[in-house]
Image 1: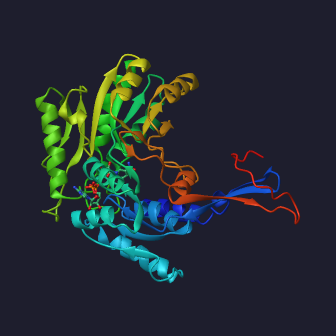
Image 2 (image 1 turned 180 degrees about the horizontal axis):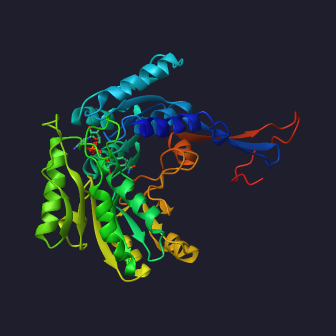
Image 3 (image 1 turned 120 degrees about the vertical axis):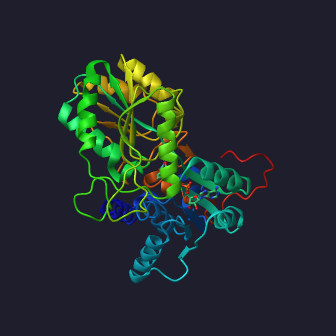
Length: 399
Ligand code: NAD
Protein backbone atom coordinates (compact mmCIF):
# COMPACT_ATOMS: atom_id res chain seq x y z
CA UNK A 1 0.00 0.00 0.00
CA UNK A 2 2.90 2.35 0.72
CA UNK A 3 4.33 1.57 -2.72
CA UNK A 4 0.90 2.25 -4.25
CA UNK A 5 0.88 5.74 -2.74
CA UNK A 6 4.55 6.51 -3.40
CA UNK A 7 4.40 5.49 -7.07
CA UNK A 8 1.18 7.49 -7.45
CA UNK A 9 2.78 10.58 -5.93
CA UNK A 10 5.60 10.31 -8.48
CA UNK A 11 2.97 10.91 -11.16
CA UNK A 12 1.67 13.96 -9.27
CA UNK A 13 5.22 15.28 -9.13
CA UNK A 14 5.62 14.63 -12.85
CA UNK A 15 2.29 16.33 -13.59
CA UNK A 16 3.61 19.43 -11.83
CA UNK A 17 6.61 19.47 -14.17
CA UNK A 18 4.87 19.18 -17.53
CA UNK A 19 4.78 22.89 -18.36
CA UNK A 20 7.37 22.64 -21.14
CA UNK A 21 5.73 19.48 -22.52
CA UNK A 22 2.58 21.55 -23.04
CA UNK A 23 4.24 24.21 -25.20
CA UNK A 24 3.08 24.79 -28.75
CA UNK A 25 4.93 25.30 -32.06
CA UNK A 26 5.58 28.36 -34.19
CA UNK A 27 6.98 29.03 -37.64
CA UNK A 28 7.28 32.67 -38.57
CA UNK A 29 7.23 33.84 -42.21
CA UNK A 30 5.82 30.74 -43.94
CA UNK A 31 4.87 33.17 -46.71
CA UNK A 32 4.90 36.93 -47.07
CA UNK A 33 3.68 38.45 -43.77
CA UNK A 34 2.22 35.09 -42.76
CA UNK A 35 3.01 33.26 -39.52
CA UNK A 36 1.70 29.98 -38.13
CA UNK A 37 1.46 28.92 -34.53
CA UNK A 38 -0.12 25.90 -32.88
CA UNK A 39 -1.03 25.48 -29.27
CA UNK A 40 -2.57 22.80 -27.11
CA UNK A 41 -6.01 23.22 -25.61
CA UNK A 42 -7.79 21.13 -23.01
CA UNK A 43 -10.55 18.83 -24.27
CA UNK A 44 -13.06 19.91 -21.62
CA UNK A 45 -14.32 17.17 -19.31
CA UNK A 46 -12.30 13.94 -19.12
CA UNK A 47 -12.96 10.78 -17.12
CA UNK A 48 -11.08 7.90 -15.54
CA UNK A 49 -12.34 4.40 -14.70
CA UNK A 50 -10.01 2.55 -12.34
CA UNK A 51 -9.46 -1.04 -11.17
CA UNK A 52 -9.17 -2.25 -7.57
CA UNK A 53 -5.58 -3.33 -7.43
CA UNK A 54 -3.81 0.02 -6.97
CA UNK A 55 -6.47 2.17 -5.31
CA UNK A 56 -4.23 5.27 -5.14
CA UNK A 57 -1.67 4.87 -7.92
CA UNK A 58 -3.99 4.24 -10.84
CA UNK A 59 -6.37 7.14 -10.10
CA UNK A 60 -3.17 9.18 -9.76
CA UNK A 61 -2.11 8.01 -13.26
CA UNK A 62 -5.35 9.63 -14.43
CA UNK A 63 -6.68 12.83 -12.90
CA UNK A 64 -3.44 14.76 -12.19
CA UNK A 65 -2.37 14.59 -15.85
CA UNK A 66 -5.94 15.29 -16.96
CA UNK A 67 -6.18 18.35 -14.72
CA UNK A 68 -2.76 19.94 -15.33
CA UNK A 69 -3.56 19.94 -19.03
CA UNK A 70 -6.58 22.10 -18.22
CA UNK A 71 -9.48 19.67 -18.09
CA UNK A 72 -12.03 19.00 -15.39
CA UNK A 73 -12.24 15.38 -14.36
CA UNK A 74 -14.75 12.69 -13.45
CA UNK A 75 -13.19 9.70 -11.68
CA UNK A 76 -14.93 6.39 -11.10
CA UNK A 77 -12.89 4.26 -8.72
CA UNK A 78 -13.38 0.53 -8.45
CA UNK A 79 -16.46 -0.30 -6.39
CA UNK A 80 -14.18 -2.60 -4.38
CA UNK A 81 -11.91 0.24 -3.15
CA UNK A 82 -14.09 3.36 -3.18
CA UNK A 83 -12.62 5.18 -0.17
CA UNK A 84 -9.05 5.80 -1.33
CA UNK A 85 -10.24 8.00 -4.20
CA UNK A 86 -12.37 10.01 -1.76
CA UNK A 87 -9.33 10.63 0.42
CA UNK A 88 -7.29 11.66 -2.64
CA UNK A 89 -10.01 14.16 -3.56
CA UNK A 90 -10.09 15.55 -0.01
CA UNK A 91 -6.33 16.04 -0.10
CA UNK A 92 -6.48 17.67 -3.53
CA UNK A 93 -9.10 20.12 -2.25
CA UNK A 94 -7.03 20.78 0.86
CA UNK A 95 -4.17 21.63 -1.50
CA UNK A 96 -6.36 24.26 -3.19
CA UNK A 97 -8.11 22.50 -6.05
CA UNK A 98 -11.19 24.60 -6.97
CA UNK A 99 -14.65 23.12 -6.50
CA UNK A 100 -15.90 21.13 -9.45
CA UNK A 101 -12.53 20.38 -11.04
CA UNK A 102 -12.31 16.83 -9.68
CA UNK A 103 -15.56 14.90 -9.38
CA UNK A 104 -16.00 11.36 -8.14
CA UNK A 105 -18.83 9.06 -9.00
CA UNK A 106 -19.26 5.59 -7.55
CA UNK A 107 -20.86 2.53 -9.01
CA UNK A 108 -20.38 -0.29 -11.46
CA UNK A 109 -21.82 -0.88 -14.91
CA UNK A 110 -24.39 1.95 -14.92
CA UNK A 111 -21.78 4.48 -13.81
CA UNK A 112 -19.39 3.22 -16.50
CA UNK A 113 -22.06 3.39 -19.20
CA UNK A 114 -23.00 6.91 -18.11
CA UNK A 115 -19.37 7.96 -18.65
CA UNK A 116 -19.28 6.25 -22.06
CA UNK A 117 -22.51 7.95 -23.19
CA UNK A 118 -22.43 11.44 -21.64
CA UNK A 119 -21.74 13.88 -24.49
CA UNK A 120 -19.89 16.39 -22.30
CA UNK A 121 -17.17 13.84 -21.52
CA UNK A 122 -14.58 13.96 -24.31
CA UNK A 123 -11.97 11.39 -23.29
CA UNK A 124 -11.79 8.31 -21.06
CA UNK A 125 -8.79 6.69 -19.40
CA UNK A 126 -9.47 3.11 -18.38
CA UNK A 127 -7.34 0.58 -16.53
CA UNK A 128 -8.68 -2.87 -15.74
CA UNK A 129 -9.53 -6.23 -17.27
CA UNK A 130 -10.18 -7.12 -20.90
CA UNK A 131 -13.96 -7.52 -20.73
CA UNK A 132 -14.64 -4.08 -19.23
CA UNK A 133 -11.91 -2.41 -21.31
CA UNK A 134 -13.15 -3.73 -24.64
CA UNK A 135 -16.72 -2.76 -23.76
CA UNK A 136 -15.70 0.77 -22.73
CA UNK A 137 -13.38 1.24 -25.73
CA UNK A 138 -16.03 0.28 -28.27
CA UNK A 139 -18.99 2.03 -26.61
CA UNK A 140 -17.14 5.29 -25.95
CA UNK A 141 -15.38 5.31 -29.34
CA UNK A 142 -18.74 4.85 -31.05
CA UNK A 143 -19.82 8.00 -29.20
CA UNK A 144 -16.84 9.89 -30.63
CA UNK A 145 -14.70 9.93 -27.49
CA UNK A 146 -10.98 9.37 -27.17
CA UNK A 147 -10.18 6.26 -25.13
CA UNK A 148 -6.94 4.95 -23.71
CA UNK A 149 -7.45 1.51 -22.17
CA UNK A 150 -4.81 -0.50 -20.34
CA UNK A 151 -6.01 -4.09 -20.19
CA UNK A 152 -4.91 -7.48 -18.87
CA UNK A 153 -1.47 -9.05 -18.90
CA UNK A 154 0.53 -12.28 -18.73
CA UNK A 155 4.11 -11.33 -18.05
CA UNK A 156 6.95 -13.76 -18.73
CA UNK A 157 10.41 -13.78 -17.15
CA UNK A 158 13.11 -15.58 -19.12
CA UNK A 159 15.96 -17.08 -17.12
CA UNK A 160 19.16 -17.98 -18.96
CA UNK A 161 21.75 -20.44 -17.68
CA UNK A 162 24.20 -17.70 -16.75
CA UNK A 163 21.72 -15.74 -14.58
CA UNK A 164 22.96 -14.81 -11.12
CA UNK A 165 21.03 -17.46 -9.12
CA UNK A 166 20.30 -15.81 -5.79
CA UNK A 167 19.24 -12.40 -7.15
CA UNK A 168 17.16 -14.04 -9.89
CA UNK A 169 15.30 -16.32 -7.49
CA UNK A 170 14.52 -13.45 -5.14
CA UNK A 171 13.31 -11.29 -8.03
CA UNK A 172 11.04 -14.06 -9.36
CA UNK A 173 9.54 -14.83 -5.96
CA UNK A 174 8.92 -11.17 -5.16
CA UNK A 175 7.45 -10.39 -8.58
CA UNK A 176 5.34 -13.55 -8.69
CA UNK A 177 3.89 -13.57 -5.19
CA UNK A 178 4.08 -9.97 -3.96
CA UNK A 179 0.59 -8.47 -3.53
CA UNK A 180 -0.56 -12.08 -4.09
CA UNK A 181 0.11 -11.63 -7.81
CA UNK A 182 -2.58 -8.94 -8.09
CA UNK A 183 -0.39 -6.59 -10.13
CA UNK A 184 -0.69 -6.09 -13.87
CA UNK A 185 3.11 -6.24 -14.07
CA UNK A 186 3.44 -9.31 -11.83
CA UNK A 187 5.56 -12.11 -13.25
CA UNK A 188 3.13 -14.96 -13.79
CA UNK A 189 5.17 -17.07 -16.25
CA UNK A 190 8.80 -18.14 -15.88
CA UNK A 191 10.61 -19.60 -18.89
CA UNK A 192 13.69 -21.54 -17.79
CA UNK A 193 16.10 -21.88 -20.70
CA UNK A 194 18.36 -24.97 -20.93
CA UNK A 195 20.13 -25.78 -17.66
CA UNK A 196 18.37 -22.87 -15.94
CA UNK A 197 15.72 -25.50 -15.16
CA UNK A 198 17.97 -26.43 -12.23
CA UNK A 199 16.59 -23.29 -10.57
CA UNK A 200 13.16 -24.87 -10.18
CA UNK A 201 13.79 -26.72 -6.85
CA UNK A 202 15.29 -23.65 -5.07
CA UNK A 203 12.47 -21.50 -6.50
CA UNK A 204 9.88 -23.82 -4.96
CA UNK A 205 11.81 -23.89 -1.67
CA UNK A 206 11.95 -20.10 -1.49
CA UNK A 207 8.22 -19.81 -2.30
CA UNK A 208 7.40 -22.35 0.44
CA UNK A 209 9.00 -20.13 3.06
CA UNK A 210 6.69 -17.16 2.34
CA UNK A 211 4.17 -16.21 5.01
CA UNK A 212 0.52 -15.89 4.09
CA UNK A 213 -1.52 -13.45 6.17
CA UNK A 214 -3.18 -10.06 6.47
CA UNK A 215 -1.20 -7.40 4.65
CA UNK A 216 -1.04 -4.94 7.55
CA UNK A 217 0.80 -7.40 9.81
CA UNK A 218 4.60 -6.99 9.76
CA UNK A 219 6.40 -10.02 8.34
CA UNK A 220 3.56 -11.12 6.08
CA UNK A 221 4.70 -11.79 2.49
CA UNK A 222 1.52 -12.79 0.70
CA UNK A 223 -1.83 -11.11 1.43
CA UNK A 224 -5.29 -12.48 0.61
CA UNK A 225 -6.99 -12.13 -2.75
CA UNK A 226 -9.43 -9.30 -3.24
CA UNK A 227 -12.70 -11.26 -3.45
CA UNK A 228 -14.20 -14.74 -3.11
CA UNK A 229 -14.64 -14.71 -6.91
CA UNK A 230 -10.91 -14.10 -7.38
CA UNK A 231 -10.06 -17.00 -5.06
CA UNK A 232 -12.45 -19.26 -6.95
CA UNK A 233 -10.94 -18.19 -10.32
CA UNK A 234 -7.35 -18.81 -9.19
CA UNK A 235 -8.13 -22.21 -7.65
CA UNK A 236 -10.15 -23.24 -10.71
CA UNK A 237 -7.37 -22.30 -13.15
CA UNK A 238 -4.72 -24.07 -11.05
CA UNK A 239 -6.89 -27.21 -10.87
CA UNK A 240 -7.45 -27.08 -14.64
CA UNK A 241 -3.69 -26.87 -15.19
CA UNK A 242 -3.14 -29.96 -13.06
CA UNK A 243 -5.98 -31.76 -14.88
CA UNK A 244 -4.35 -30.89 -18.21
CA UNK A 245 -0.96 -32.31 -17.24
CA UNK A 246 0.91 -29.65 -15.25
CA UNK A 247 2.48 -30.55 -11.90
CA UNK A 248 2.19 -28.52 -8.72
CA UNK A 249 5.27 -28.89 -6.52
CA UNK A 250 3.65 -26.16 -4.41
CA UNK A 251 -0.14 -25.74 -4.29
CA UNK A 252 -1.62 -22.99 -2.11
CA UNK A 253 -5.25 -24.11 -2.46
CA UNK A 254 -7.26 -24.67 0.71
CA UNK A 255 -5.05 -22.63 3.06
CA UNK A 256 -6.38 -21.14 6.28
CA UNK A 257 -5.03 -18.26 8.36
CA UNK A 258 -5.73 -18.14 12.11
CA UNK A 259 -8.16 -15.42 13.12
CA UNK A 260 -9.34 -14.74 9.55
CA UNK A 261 -11.77 -17.55 8.67
CA UNK A 262 -13.38 -15.57 5.86
CA UNK A 263 -10.20 -14.40 4.12
CA UNK A 264 -9.76 -15.18 0.44
CA UNK A 265 -6.57 -17.14 1.10
CA UNK A 266 -4.54 -18.76 -1.64
CA UNK A 267 -0.95 -19.59 -0.82
CA UNK A 268 1.99 -19.35 -3.21
CA UNK A 269 1.58 -21.89 -5.99
CA UNK A 270 4.11 -23.13 -8.54
CA UNK A 271 2.87 -24.98 -11.61
CA UNK A 272 5.51 -26.72 -13.72
CA UNK A 273 5.50 -28.38 -17.15
CA UNK A 274 2.94 -25.84 -18.28
CA UNK A 275 2.32 -25.61 -22.03
CA UNK A 276 0.65 -22.81 -24.02
CA UNK A 277 -2.42 -24.95 -24.80
CA UNK A 278 -3.45 -25.20 -21.14
CA UNK A 279 -6.33 -23.10 -19.82
CA UNK A 280 -4.17 -21.89 -16.92
CA UNK A 281 -1.69 -20.46 -19.45
CA UNK A 282 -4.29 -18.98 -21.79
CA UNK A 283 -6.04 -17.00 -19.02
CA UNK A 284 -4.83 -14.20 -16.79
CA UNK A 285 -4.68 -15.76 -13.32
CA UNK A 286 -4.07 -12.57 -11.28
CA UNK A 287 -3.14 -14.55 -8.19
CA UNK A 288 -0.07 -15.92 -6.39
CA UNK A 289 0.77 -18.48 -9.07
CA UNK A 290 4.00 -18.89 -11.00
CA UNK A 291 3.67 -21.03 -14.11
CA UNK A 292 6.97 -22.53 -15.18
CA UNK A 293 7.73 -23.43 -18.79
CA UNK A 294 10.91 -24.74 -20.35
CA UNK A 295 12.72 -23.75 -23.53
CA UNK A 296 15.92 -25.08 -25.07
CA UNK A 297 17.09 -21.76 -26.50
CA UNK A 298 16.56 -18.04 -26.10
CA UNK A 299 15.00 -17.98 -29.59
CA UNK A 300 12.41 -20.52 -28.43
CA UNK A 301 11.63 -18.43 -25.34
CA UNK A 302 11.20 -15.28 -27.43
CA UNK A 303 8.90 -17.12 -29.87
CA UNK A 304 6.77 -18.33 -26.95
CA UNK A 305 6.36 -14.81 -25.58
CA UNK A 306 5.65 -13.33 -28.99
CA UNK A 307 2.92 -15.92 -29.55
CA UNK A 308 1.17 -14.77 -26.36
CA UNK A 309 -1.50 -12.15 -27.08
CA UNK A 310 -0.42 -9.74 -24.31
CA UNK A 311 2.43 -7.24 -24.31
CA UNK A 312 2.44 -5.53 -20.94
CA UNK A 313 5.82 -6.48 -19.50
CA UNK A 314 8.61 -9.03 -19.66
CA UNK A 315 12.02 -9.57 -18.13
CA UNK A 316 15.24 -11.42 -18.83
CA UNK A 317 17.78 -12.61 -16.26
CA UNK A 318 21.27 -13.08 -17.64
CA UNK A 319 24.85 -11.90 -17.28
CA UNK A 320 25.22 -11.66 -21.07
CA UNK A 321 24.79 -8.20 -22.53
CA UNK A 322 24.48 -9.69 -26.01
CA UNK A 323 21.64 -12.00 -24.95
CA UNK A 324 19.87 -9.17 -23.14
CA UNK A 325 20.21 -6.95 -26.20
CA UNK A 326 18.87 -9.66 -28.54
CA UNK A 327 15.92 -10.24 -26.20
CA UNK A 328 15.16 -6.53 -25.91
CA UNK A 329 15.10 -6.08 -29.68
CA UNK A 330 13.26 -9.25 -30.67
CA UNK A 331 10.62 -9.57 -27.96
CA UNK A 332 7.30 -7.97 -28.93
CA UNK A 333 6.41 -6.58 -25.50
CA UNK A 334 6.16 -2.91 -24.62
CA UNK A 335 8.06 -2.87 -21.30
CA UNK A 336 11.23 -4.89 -20.82
CA UNK A 337 13.25 -5.47 -17.66
CA UNK A 338 16.85 -6.65 -17.69
CA UNK A 339 17.74 -8.33 -14.40
CA UNK A 340 14.75 -6.68 -12.80
CA UNK A 341 11.31 -8.14 -12.87
CA UNK A 342 8.66 -5.39 -12.83
CA UNK A 343 9.82 -2.70 -15.24
CA UNK A 344 7.16 -0.07 -14.54
CA UNK A 345 8.62 3.13 -15.99
CA UNK A 346 9.00 6.32 -14.01
CA UNK A 347 6.34 8.81 -15.07
CA UNK A 348 8.57 11.04 -17.20
CA UNK A 349 8.48 8.02 -19.53
CA UNK A 350 5.07 6.62 -20.41
CA UNK A 351 3.55 3.27 -19.38
CA UNK A 352 4.05 1.48 -22.68
CA UNK A 353 2.33 -1.90 -22.55
CA UNK A 354 1.60 -3.12 -26.08
CA UNK A 355 -0.49 -5.52 -28.20
CA UNK A 356 -3.36 -7.13 -26.23
CA UNK A 357 -2.55 -5.11 -23.12
CA UNK A 358 -3.70 -1.79 -24.57
CA UNK A 359 -6.42 -0.28 -26.72
CA UNK A 360 -6.01 3.27 -27.99
CA UNK A 361 -3.09 5.23 -29.34
CA UNK A 362 -1.73 7.23 -26.42
CA UNK A 363 -0.02 5.90 -23.33
CA UNK A 364 -0.61 6.84 -19.72
CA UNK A 365 1.53 9.61 -18.18
CA UNK A 366 4.59 11.19 -19.77
CA UNK A 367 4.33 12.79 -23.21
CA UNK A 368 1.59 10.32 -24.19
CA UNK A 369 -0.76 11.68 -21.54
CA UNK A 370 -0.19 15.30 -22.59
CA UNK A 371 -1.14 14.31 -26.14
CA UNK A 372 -4.12 12.29 -24.96
CA UNK A 373 -5.63 15.02 -22.81
CA UNK A 374 -5.16 17.92 -25.25
CA UNK A 375 -6.17 18.97 -28.73
CA UNK A 376 -4.30 21.29 -31.06
CA UNK A 377 -5.42 24.61 -32.47
CA UNK A 378 -3.38 26.03 -35.35
CA UNK A 379 -3.56 29.73 -36.25
CA UNK A 380 -2.33 31.12 -39.56
CA UNK A 381 -2.13 34.91 -39.47
CA UNK A 382 -1.31 37.51 -42.05
CA UNK A 383 -0.27 40.99 -40.91
CA UNK A 384 0.60 42.90 -44.07
CA UNK A 385 2.20 46.31 -43.69
CA UNK A 386 -0.24 49.11 -44.32
CA UNK A 387 -0.60 49.87 -48.03
CA UNK A 388 0.61 46.42 -49.18
CA UNK A 389 -0.76 44.44 -52.14
CA UNK A 390 -4.52 43.84 -51.80
CA UNK A 391 -5.22 42.49 -55.30
CA UNK A 392 -8.06 39.96 -55.67
CA UNK A 393 -6.69 36.48 -56.37
CA UNK A 394 -8.94 33.46 -57.01
CA UNK A 395 -6.12 30.89 -57.15
CA UNK A 396 -5.10 28.52 -54.37
CA UNK A 397 -2.76 30.56 -52.13
CA UNK A 398 0.83 29.33 -52.34
CA UNK A 399 2.95 32.29 -51.31
P1 NAD B 1 -12.19 -4.86 -13.79
O1 NAD B 1 -12.10 -4.83 -15.27
O2 NAD B 1 -13.07 -5.89 -13.16
O3 NAD B 1 -12.69 -3.44 -13.24
C1 NAD B 1 -12.14 -2.23 -13.72
C2 NAD B 1 -13.22 -1.16 -13.76
O4 NAD B 1 -14.18 -1.50 -14.74
C3 NAD B 1 -13.95 -1.00 -12.43
O5 NAD B 1 -14.12 0.38 -12.18
C4 NAD B 1 -15.28 -1.70 -12.67
O6 NAD B 1 -16.36 -1.08 -11.99
C5 NAD B 1 -15.48 -1.59 -14.16
N1 NAD B 1 -16.14 -2.76 -14.76
C6 NAD B 1 -15.84 -4.06 -14.49
N2 NAD B 1 -16.58 -4.87 -15.29
C7 NAD B 1 -17.32 -4.07 -16.07
C8 NAD B 1 -18.25 -4.30 -17.12
N3 NAD B 1 -18.57 -5.55 -17.51
N4 NAD B 1 -18.84 -3.24 -17.71
C9 NAD B 1 -18.53 -1.99 -17.34
N5 NAD B 1 -17.64 -1.72 -16.36
C10 NAD B 1 -17.04 -2.73 -15.73
O7 NAD B 1 -10.68 -4.99 -13.24
P2 NAD B 1 -10.21 -5.29 -11.75
O8 NAD B 1 -10.53 -6.68 -11.38
O9 NAD B 1 -10.66 -4.19 -10.85
O10 NAD B 1 -8.62 -5.15 -11.93
C11 NAD B 1 -7.80 -6.22 -12.36
C12 NAD B 1 -7.53 -6.15 -13.85
O11 NAD B 1 -6.93 -4.90 -14.18
C13 NAD B 1 -6.54 -7.21 -14.32
O12 NAD B 1 -6.97 -7.73 -15.53
C14 NAD B 1 -5.24 -6.43 -14.51
O13 NAD B 1 -4.34 -6.98 -15.45
C15 NAD B 1 -5.77 -5.11 -14.98
N6 NAD B 1 -4.80 -4.05 -14.77
C16 NAD B 1 -4.12 -3.60 -15.86
C17 NAD B 1 -3.16 -2.61 -15.70
C18 NAD B 1 -2.40 -2.12 -16.88
O14 NAD B 1 -1.80 -1.05 -16.80
N7 NAD B 1 -2.37 -2.84 -17.99
C19 NAD B 1 -2.92 -2.07 -14.43
C20 NAD B 1 -3.66 -2.56 -13.33
C21 NAD B 1 -4.60 -3.55 -13.52
